[in-house]
Image 1 (tube, helix red, strand yellow):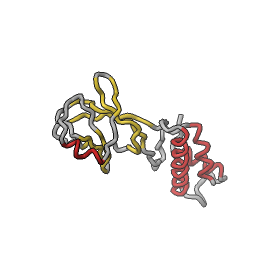
Image 2 (cartoon, rainbow, N blue to C red):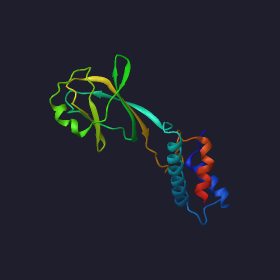
Image 3 (cartoon, rainbow, N blue to C red):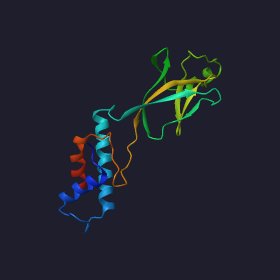
Image 4 (tube, rainbow, N blue to C red):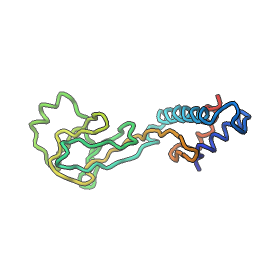
Length: 171
C-alpha cells in the first residue's frame, strides 16, 4: 500500500533523528519529498516509458472546429488512435507542409485526420464534420501531482521506490 505524505514525512524525520519538528519544518520536508518524487518519476519514465500511462476518449462534435481539450493531468502523448470498427488505427502527427492539402479534402467517418497540439488542446485536421462518441483514444503519460496535504497519496508510484524517495529527501 502506498504511503501518505504524513507517513513519508515521519520516515524522513526518523532518518534525520528528529521525531518532532525542531530544526526541519514540515514545509521543508514536504518540498524535499516532492523534489525526490519528481526525480524518481523522471527516472522511472526513462526506464519504463509506459509505467504512468493512461487513456482518455475523445468524442467528435461537428461544431468544435476540430479542437478538443486535453485531460488536466496530461504530460506527454504516447499514442493517438482512431476507433474504427472495434480496431484502433494510429493517427499521424500533423506535418505543417500538409496544410494546403488538408483544406481541400472532404472528411468522412472513415478518413483518418492528422493531429497536433496547441496549448492545452489537441487539434484534428481536417476538422470532423460529424458527431461520434469515443471517436479517438488518447494514450498519454500522466503528469506527476505534487503531494501537499498530509493524507495525499500517489497510488501510481511504485511502493518499492518509496525508500529511494525518502533517502533522497534526507540527503
